[in-house]
Length: 98
Image (cartoon, rainbow, N blue to C red; front, side):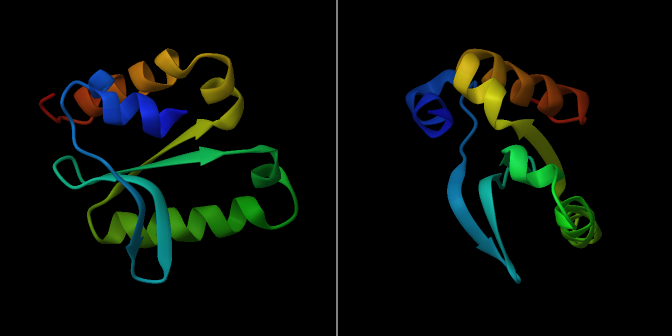
């Protein structure tokens, strides 16, 4: 759902890649212009050691100048437009011109 919304231009003209490989990871969505990774997290991200693994991954990306924005899967399912607005707000707040 989020990919469809981004592809149809709701993301303010930002270009995203879906399932973008980088190093040992595959990013849900990546915007090279903003150096922004958007991850859609379901309930499993709060189970077991998943949160710790996410922190390691986010740190690895940050060391390479890539910010990570995590959006809950429930937000995407309930209101995809709100999820897109969250991305745009983060992009603007991150010092990125949208």
